[in-house]
Image 1 (cartoon, protein in one colour):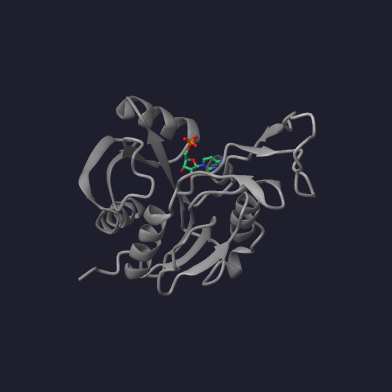
Image 2: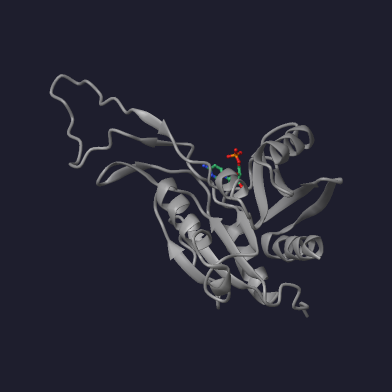
Length: 227
Ligand code: C5P
């Protein structure tokens, strides 16, 4: 039995990878499966929240009762998140819009290809390869945390080493009250994970477990911090 810890709360989250086109049939992405983010969306819904999931391309079905909006690129993810949060009069910040909690789980591409081709790139007769030019993508989590009235923001970090040191540094740099570190960089696509929670009071470890179980624990930790 899961108590309704997030009853009448709204939760907006990002999950999955992003896909940055190179041409109409090729692109750059990463190995994020979306499993952790989808598990959190499901747990939040079970806890009574109204959940909107902004998802990059994944093979997963939307959890029951969760509103999913599909996006492809980091820029689209950023714009969709912002349109869910910004410019809504306070009097209308009920059910559909606004968010009390924002959880950034997506593995967002740091760069996009600025010279993406409108046509499929062809091999050159002389064997020369195309040159891709990159530009940095917006940092969605940092942008949300910098809003005049930000929702309660939760970030994720996948560090391969010195998680305890980098986790707290990242929480402060991103300016979020709660940052969740994955231990090891081997979480992508796996069904289990091991998390460390960083907040202003220090850090707490959640032992290795299935992602759904960890998601429920994380929702309880978030709910506790909202009180
Ligand atoms: O800086 P780094 O990519 O390690 O930060 C990870 C956290 O920031 C995750 O919560 C991720 O969803 C979020 N992020 C974002 N937009 C980006 C890059 C990361 O929201 N462009």
